[in-house]
Every structure is written in C-alpha cells, then in structure tokens.
Image (cartoon, rainbow, N blue to C red; front, side, top):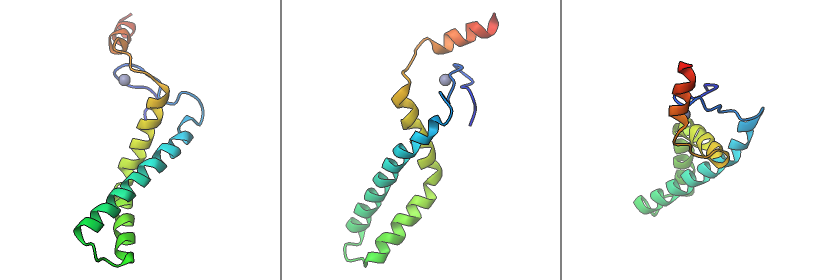
Length: 97
Ligand SMILES: [Zn+2]
C-alpha cells in the first residue's frame, strides 16, 4: 500500500497500526458476502444439502478475499477521514512551490 495518495497527498496510515481496525470492517464484509451466498444458493437450489452451502460460502470468500481486504480498508479509512474537494488543487499548488 502506498504511504500517500499520488493525487491529493493524503496520508493513508493515520497512525501506527491504523488498519488493524479495518479487520472489523472486513469481518462485516465477510458476513455480508456469506449471507448473500447463502441466500443465492437457497434461491437457486433450495433442496441443497448443508455441505453445498458451506462449500459455496468458502469458495466465494476465498475468491473475493482481495476485494474483501480492500473494501475493509476503504470502509475503515472513510470512517475517520472526510472528503476535501480542494485537496487535489492544494496538493498540486504545494508541489509547484
Ligand atoms: Zn487522494
């Protein structure tokens, strides 16, 4: 992961160990993926045995692990930083001077 945003200069890791908290957001994403997979499996094959649900959920979680990792960090950093519409302009001006 980059230390700063190349466009606006925002520092990603606000303090040491900042992204440990992203595990909570990642857990919520995992639960959402699992429930969605369970519901889809139920709707497509309602008479499936229990192990089919488990295999489907595990497969989806492994395949979507990179997405889950990034979504967790994205949710976590957005809880603590706001949007600054002037950030890119300010960063470009600071680079020039
Ligand atoms: Zn940025």
